[in-house]
Length: 207
Ligand code: AMP
Image (cartoon, rainbow, N blue to C red; front, side, top):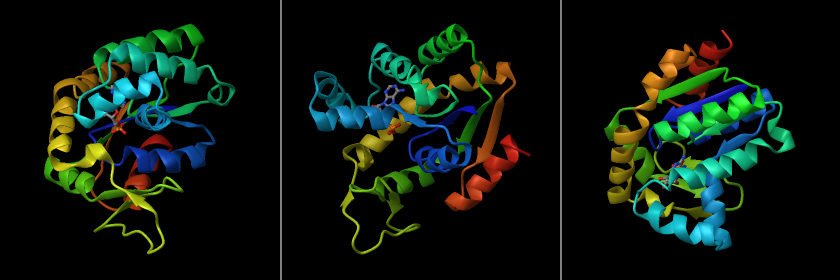
């Protein structure tokens, strides 16, 4: 299974990617997770990305394309992958097309998760992650257990989320026509519980 999850920040890509990874036995490749790991490790890339991420801006195409190229060459990605948060610009999509062509593989599905903007705001600002397990919770819809060690992503503050949603509308929404042409784009209503969204998604890609 080679699949891309497309959707605005807090549309549920990370949550659904974790489920699909289990179901299809392929790795989840999240550029956001890779960049956050670089920030935590304090690498030069992490320092560059940190400022941009905190400002709700995209990291340069060349940086994320390089990260994904390296990651896709690793052995566990040879049997497939779930891409979460990449591509986010037309240049990234074109670079991915070229890379997959070189590797001699194609995409099975691009799944677009649709969620209205007011709900995205609420999801992002009330989203919390358990530092130890990486499990994602929501203070209202999916409350964490009392012993969770929670962190609130720096870029999930209200003003930053607005900027990230604007970046999505300005740059990432332009990918839809690109993938529509390939005939493998599927749209899923992302409003509802994670389980409901998973069921809808699986019926689109396996049904
Ligand atoms: P995410 O966890 O996917 O919401 O990504 C968090 C932040 O990392 C984004 O707001 C961007 O600053 C950066 N980022 C992640 N993936 C990409 C990408 N494909 N292109 C550019 N910036 C990215």
